[in-house]
Image (cartoon, rainbow over all chains, first blue to last red):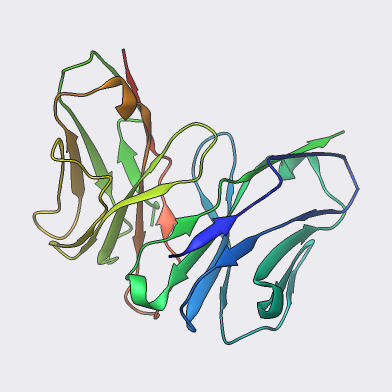
Length: 115
Length: 115
């Protein structure tokens, strides 16, 4: 069965620090999709990135970067030079090819960036 | 395109009452999902529609829960005889068929409190 683990419940950093959010997943499928979502206090889940299991290239988007490693079943998310506006709960999610369209989410990491 | 819209944003109800939530997906998105999120947890999948057909239901969706999407556009989620354990955020999401395994876009959710 699929499972996503975000071991860091809460992280607190000072503005301009770099921070990495960890995500470890479990799946028996060879084809799957990984996602990161951001949930600000307003409650809406904001899509950040999708990565396919057959594409292990890391990706950078502005201050955000993602490190996907199939060998360790990890899909970690790094924010460089964090800002107060980055404060939110971040969720990692998994969709398996064989489990239809459902997303399995981790429990989330609450990131607080202090000025 | 105004995104996924959910109504109401907040609902307080007495135990035993019935409640109904509405979700308007992004126009032309034929896939619609309902998730439930309790405090401090990640969202959990409830059910999935493709057009008007309900294709997948989680075992979390007890007999007291029913979801419909009669014309393949908006959807409703009804909870009958509410219990305190039903208190949660109910999230709706939609996705487009134009790209295989594309990301789901979420609404801001309906927060239900059962007293």
